[in-house]
Length: 313
Image (cartoon, rainbow, N blue to C red; front, side):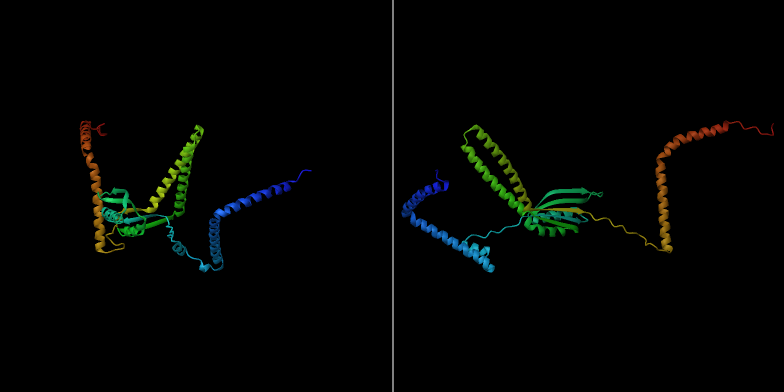
């Protein structure tokens, strides 16, 4: 009869346990003090964690703050700064657009900004009639710069937009770290590879990881630029002309009639002058063609015989 599997396992376990006891006994005599100290440290750490957990569960008000823990451990507290992309637009009007544009450029210089784009147009009177500028100013000075730009000329409209991209910045930063660590591991494998096939496969993976890292670095640089510098678009126009009427509606009397008659006479004279001016270029043509025709008609009338009267018959 064959022995069962549990009995065989139990029979083999007994000598193994004896061997383990002997080896532990022999090593305990040489390194017992270090094992005891490690055990004491582990127990102490476990007791501290248990006390912290029990304190948090029983009395929430006694839980130390992050600043207190940092001061006890000697580490500096970690302060997370939000990453904000701020953009603004300001519409202004000014009789002198060129002067208002100089004022806008002065605001950019005041806050260590710069004008990245500019567009101007000239009006019919040969003066600047429109200007559009794009400013990049440090994000910390965005609100102050917007306030000064609104005072550079007559304010028509002002808008601001803020977008929190803190999560996106953290995500890209972590992906950059992971990509660099992956490239380091692949580079180590490439230095140890000996076969041609392995080298080609590892180099292909390395090229793909480097391309991903370059894309992430471009995203990281773009986010850093957008969060460090704010964009403000400024447009400057000339105010619309205001027309005033000379006469008050419903006015009556001699003076009102005189003014109305004078305006009508001027309108009639203007119309006659317009007609005469339009016909004046045709005068030589009429003279060259009309005068010979008139002479021919007159001569034909003179040479025509008189018609016979009924009495003569």
